[in-house]
Length: 128
Image 1 (spheres, rainbow, N blue to C red):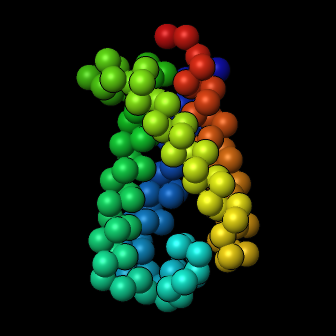
Image 2 (cartoon, rainbow, N blue to C red; image 1 turned 90 degrees about the vertical axis):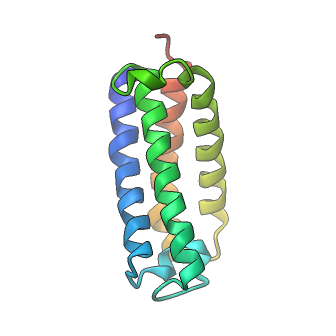
Image 3 (spheres, rainbow, N blue to C red; image 1 turned 120 degrees about the vertical axis):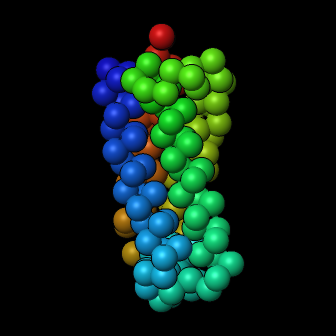
């Protein structure tokens, strides 16, 4: 179960990483992020932030995979405590996506955030 949930987390977060990379590259999807405050292309500072977000999300996938023993064995020593950072970030993400003023962002990203939270909790609570 833990391995399956880790793979589910990694696959799901890959979509979010690709979305962030697209925003950073100038995709006109600003209405679907940051509360829809910047429809169209993000301004340069937010495009840099999207790159940072993509890197952070990728690292989170690595932590989850390492914790489940599915990949990145070099990260295994830090994974037991880092997984709780992933869980906390996922919970915060779900909360923010539930209260965003952008209805379209809420419809798209709240379910994604829920999957990320649920799967990271399963991995965090699983025994290695």
